[in-house]
Image: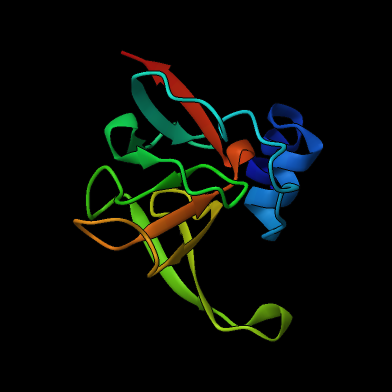
Length: 126
């Protein structure tokens, strides 16, 4: 319970709702949607390294998109059957914070599109 309270104090209301209650930020509204500086994207809750700017691409989906995670251990995958759809939810493997979803319509070499909420991320410039 104290971890949840600490996160409520640390995060914005929207970041808390997204990371802890699997909410979604409004499309095209996120800080990192049209952001392409060099660096590493980390979990806003625990600072775990999740994505590299090298793997970011313009998807026009409304959310920051990556074709792969920074490493195979960074992301946890689970089936999400909400809203009458079946999708693959992606969460931080270290703290279980909801990040977004992964789809099979991304670019080569992976053909993956990690569609990630900006508020679930922090950024460290290189």
